[in-house]
Image (cartoon, rainbow, N blue to C red; front, top):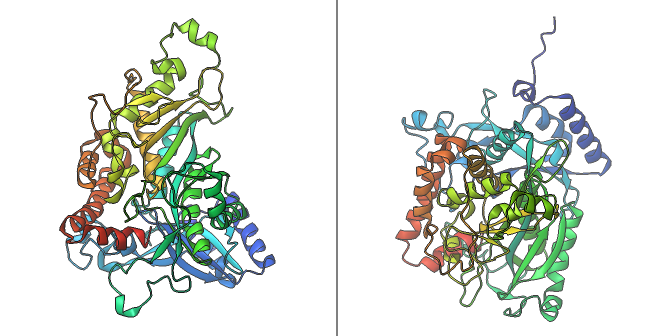
Length: 503
């Protein structure tokens, strides 16, 4: 009889032959590449990466036994303050497993392994948290998306996502220190760096502005490509110092993993060369333009890969008698139209999962290429949902323009699945397409983070899909952020420190 103790990975059910083979591949590659250490990181509820760095000789232990992490990292708002009282008795009922700032264990996912191009002899792995009793931590946002994808998989479907991410790149006025390391200025959160622009803006897609920003954009390109991310293009956006990265469509989990890695990677690689990148929606300066994160999405058949939103031909439209182009079923399949209706139906509830900071709500303004009302349009960039494609186009898709680039990608994508599935399961029908997205008297999006998290709590389908325990947890953390902003005497400085310096 074998009395040997099982590993923690085995106790968690994370020791399949496929995982074992992946682990051996990573260990061999790390040794052959002469890696000195590997960053073992986890994505927090705000979409930021945290973790520890292990020396290569101990990496096998991390795969088998996990690594300890203080559980309060799951309980922090965007200022890094723990918003639950973990040393009081009530925490045991409110959040079992978090008493006394106890440990959770991170297990690395070997399929996510990367070698960082900007850091010498350094590997990188995404991890997910488990309680010491080998139960998954239900507040892990990556697990939330995995659970939503499992709901799709039961129907034989997957979600394909393409990313369009706007962000800002600035030149550090003090490249060596960034003007934020003076100990006399230390605070919680700390000061933001002093910066200058890489292009003056207000000249969309201008080649001259691209040439001025080219040194920084070349760093972005090289970093993304060296990491194997599916970058398609880099572009000059309208706002001063604003740029956009566009990615090829992939399955949703790959897209979400790519997003968290891309944001962290470009910030680090650019910082080493004297730049400051921010995925804050509205940087704290006059005359800037808001940044959005436009999420292109379609369901596909897991067996064939067929796009389930795409109509096969114009004859298919005529046969069905769908001659009105403003009818969603003219462009989308009936399944796609029901999914679209689900997104519309749950727009108010999903907003806080797509636009996740106080700052991001300043983007919802008329005639700003950002949504204001809960509408869809056919190739209309003023609508919340833009339907792109048509009969015979295999890339037919829905573009959600609700998101900000700081959003947690796992929660953003999970919200789409849950809302879309509800539309399909209840055979919801969308209204006709809008022709004037800023003029129509449709229902409006929430205008503050506080309003948005309240709507989330009132959305039965999202609460059921995410889990009511997660929704309460998310509301509690985001309410802390909203309250501190409301109480701040200098709201611009609040956003400068809380978002511009960190996101």
